[in-house]
Length: 232
Figure: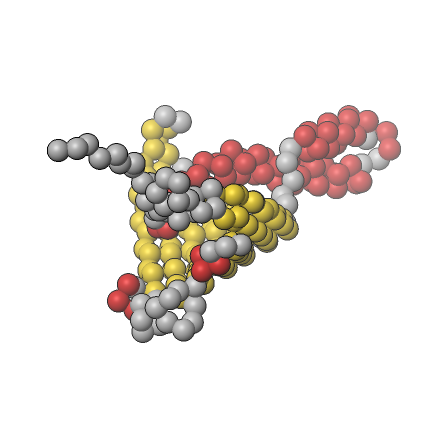
């Protein structure tokens, strides 16, 4: 019995589950915002103190202003070192990738393709002293030169909220609606997928080293087209 040569063929890679990705984004978002929010709160408190001191300075006589003037200048210098709230933020990026075996064919029968992606995000920040509130809209598109049937685009709306209550209690929530449009051979039209998600978390800090956390999330995937409604 002869020995036959064989090669391992790598299958099409599965993308990270959308809902798992959302949970990871929430966790990462909480980590990033923790330190940033403390700095922004400090800046808000300092700005309020500075405004109060400037008002007091305007009510004093010229001979009594020296010490308070130095204090006001010191507060202004401290305020310059702290980050300011960016009420409007815009980000755009794109990538180009060449895949030499886009269809994952066997050795010596490969076929390559160029993949282009572009993404854009806009954020409106309406946060206050103790409350973070942001609205984000983002969109992205991928297109291919050879395998154009893999082209897709998506758009997403997201709301984020976070508030500190009673000194040690913190509540965060975010909700998102995403529309994903891709090509398909099943019907004479594009395949449209809707994703709805919401996540909420409570944190009670007993001490700097011990805290109690409770969180929940709800996710819904919806295909309104009859050909795919069983996948909802």
